[in-house]
Length: 139
Image (tube, rainbow, N blue to C red; front, side):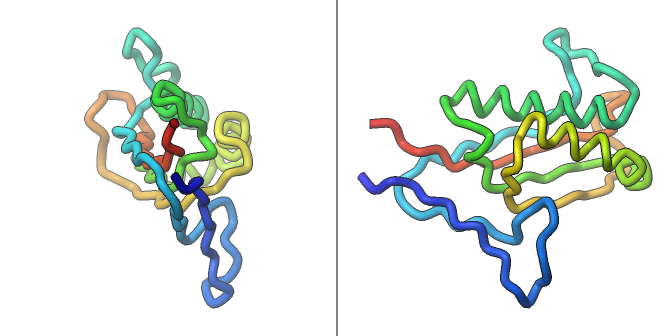
């Protein structure tokens, strides 16, 4: 069995990537985990706060919980899509969002996209995060 290797791809022609990678190449044997969109629910499925940064952090924690349940780590995330209902609110909370990201995920920056949407399904949700992780196969 070949060990898994993640290669972050950031071609110079695209300029420096800040807080994300332009591509992630997965080499070797691995299992792919697709994490459904996670909102800022607690265990009672209640939105934790109306504050954007708090919702962002809880949604990330929920993504991490799914990955940990599979036996993986957040460093195995290869792609993340962040849906927000208000881009201006996201930008205004960037300092807190960055701190929350580093607290939950660390300094691992997978390929990412941020998309503004008209609304999310869960009332009161301001952010939803989905992810894909490449997990090393267990022997």
